Length: 385
Figure 1 (spheres, rainbow, N blue to C red):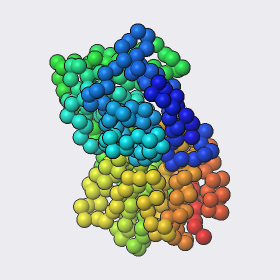
Figure 2 (figure 1 turned 45 degrees about the vertical axis):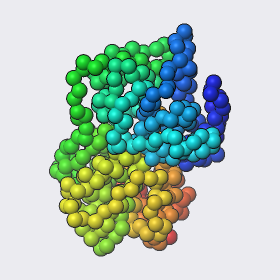
Figure 3 (figure 1 turned 90 degrees about the vertical axis):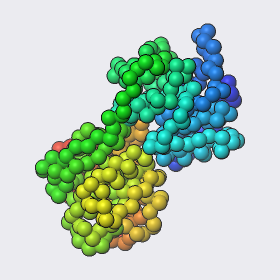
Figure 4 (figure 1 turned 90 degrees about the horizontal axis):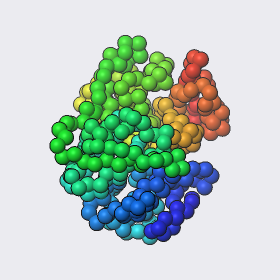
């Protein structure tokens, strides 16, 4: 836990799930820059926060917590960000009920007076968010966005310009930058192009040629990522009434392939992204049929799955948390998988060879077998004994 000091006071903030060994803070210089701008810097007047304030993409709740007295509406695609926000609000003594927490799938407020955007890593997610928010923005809306310099590109500015109105950027401060956007009521409003659907290639086993649905922000939203492609060609061959978990499901193609290969299986799709779980449900329903059995959970890994209930867990873990490279997410997923698996149950993982997941798996499970590999990827199996 670290302390963020602002003109509104000091705030003890942490990421979620909280880990005392986590070296990363729950905010960065981009959040600090935006908060200073709201207070009024460089001869600019403070921003009037008396109207409806919407905070989009607040990564760990720092912005929402500092602005809690203004009853902001937070919009995020991340369950973990929502949980971090709730914990940080409670820790600060704020009135949690004064803050509205919405997912990226929820309808935004009908009118927005101050729109604060933390630029996401995914340009597609930003595009979808701006399309959803644009109808609620009016000529007097203050639109401010922030991000680290490496997160803001010409394409980022063009999106704001095309969907909201004229856009400019600030000077960089501590490698962070602000985006100032002036709403143009004369712009022609168009619907979001998301979700995006495409057909899988013909060389990915039982999933070949199937149609997948991707909401904005899903990893490799416009094509099949190479790691998932590799695992699709090396899925375990199983029969019977297995309970299968697609952990970190993304668009759900792994779990859907497992269901197609074994119609007796019941698949649980799990992700911390609301848009990912919605994508997985659409992909599954389009391919497995409306009567096929499956569960769809938004949550923190496998905390919502009954202990000792799973026969097979399929996992293509991320190795980034926003811009930071870390194996913490994979480690939490592997530990959760071991808890959720029954005795004899199996975890199948695909990952970049250089990440050395076999070391983590042997530490957690006491065993690890390499099922397949190429110069870039490996498929690993660990068994709960």
